[in-house]
Image 1: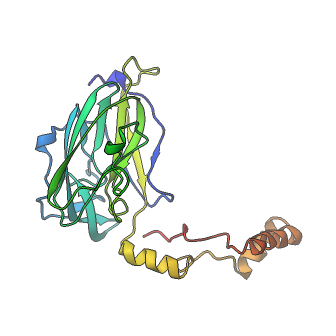
Image 2: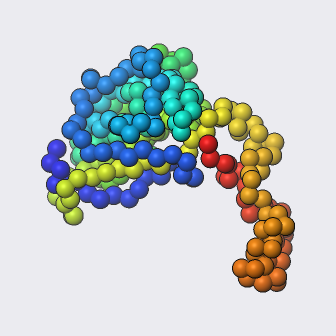
Image 3: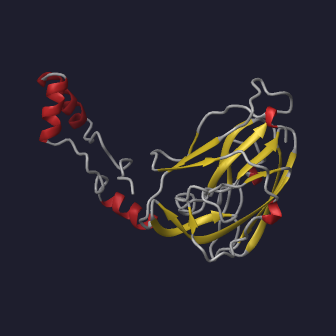
Length: 258
């Protein structure tokens, strides 16, 4: 693919808080068949300086979903990977093409892939219970759809907590015509939450107490700081507002980073 056809695109954010990031370098394309198929026993180490996220191009893709150990921020935990990569490979396509994406589920649980923001037939949308039944354990599902748009998007699992454990990646769709602003190369940055806790247990704790992991509650020290920054009336009004809403300024989205 001509590098001059690449375009600067907006950052692609995963969830809400930046806890981890992987920079995807523009490298020669890696053939789909040469990628891993979830059969490695060595943990994927996202901390290594040479950690590379594969870039797949073309109109046919094979994505292998598996559970594997991954090292993030020096700690090992179980991850849901596509083609042994954390995050999942970047898919580069072209507007107007019809793509065929075979998802091989190598896990003992069902999975799915939702093409976030893409205009696809409802049965290809990838949301279990709504657009299809999901991809059963140890089976293959083939997504087929025509690309009706260009830009930067992302794809992710819509099953259980697979997205939260790494099953997400970027999509770059080149426009059918010329790029408006040709550049030498493109870099995609994927930002995603990460926790070493069991996500099922984490959700249970959040339901029991939304601020269980929040170490930045508005205490007396924070009150004095607000008074010093503004005045006592403004600090009082700020707390009165939150009390009237029966909310805290920090809630379940404020989990402490690993």
